[in-house]
Image: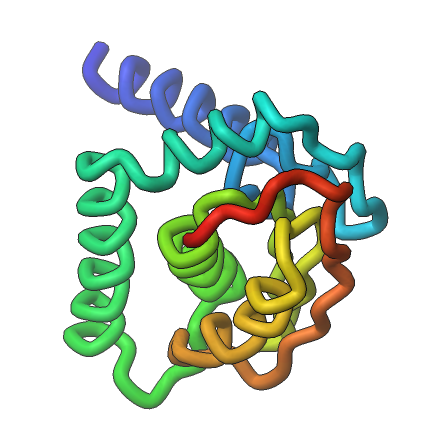
Length: 156
């Protein structure tokens, strides 16, 4: 009976993972694919994204996620290539915390990170690449994001 339960649980988890898209998103309103920029955010969306990303609990969670992935990598896989999923997740966390008004989709493929979506200012657009390069395993960054519509600029 225990083996059957384990088999069912593994199947459900496998379906859940395969159902997830292959992009990481900084907000629920970010594009579902790196092949699209998505819809420009309105003011309410920008404010909601900022509120979510600057929430102290969410910031602590994102930073803890980055640290935990780095620690696991250091303990078990030193010298090996990092998985695209780990690189993608860490870049998403890094961008979400440091660019809280963003609406970005991130995908990693063999260390090449592609970022698309909307960002609120030119300064923040220029911060995407250096922030992504801080993550171990990023070899190159392809920024396809665009500066969003003419909304009031927000610091963050």
